[in-house]
Image 1 (cartoon, rainbow, N blue to C red):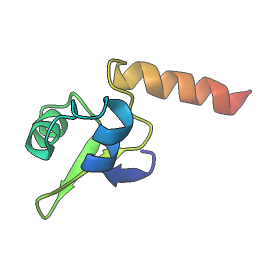
Image 2: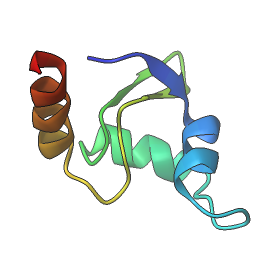
Image 3: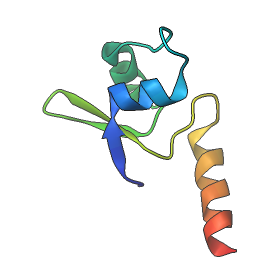
Image 4: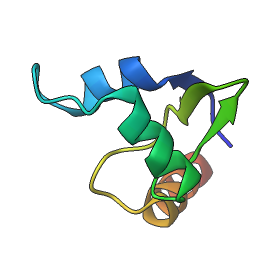
Length: 69
């Protein structure tokens, strides 16, 4: 697993200003497996390598290929 970042920062990075999902939505995505991350003591953390709209498995495979080059 890559480094973790706050869900709010991840949302700001991945979505246009004013269109970010709220942390409850991101938490649900993490809990349902749509995003790789963790919920620790109610705080939502998302893997910094996660990109919205790209499967986690695909992102992981691409990162692995890049690191091997």
